Image (cartoon, rainbow, N blue to C red):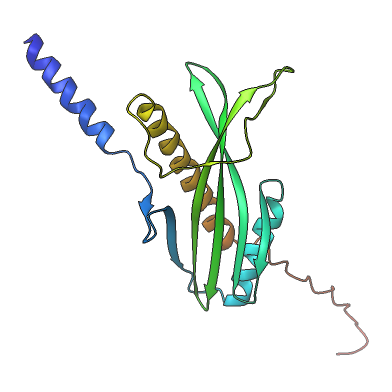
Length: 192
């Protein structure tokens, strides 16, 4: 009975660990997060304007590099947190490139060139980057640090997935398109 319960628990933990999502790999061997979204009611110009507004709203973590009438490129960063029991602290940041292209009634975006920069505590107790040169997320590591690197990759994927969902939600909402209110008409009882 004990061994049967142990066997069921082991199989359950293996299937849970196998279900973790990770990045897909592009042709050049780098990790990529790629999405195509159909937006049937929204035109190309509105989609590009909403994407610009999304980047401007997130100005501290995303900076626009290049923009045309139908595409945007930007650089950004995501903070990866490490939680032990209840207490959490940032363990590093992931730098990425964001590409956005729009056509009439659909758009696509992808995040690529992920680089991880580890954090350490400075003499004032703040977490700061140890270096300005990042390690690519797709690089192979030795067996000693492979578990920790896999955790960093999983946390980065979860953050990127949240970022992608927030971008889709922002582009789907018409909060960025301000409707012009018509002035109230005056009613005249002399003219009818």
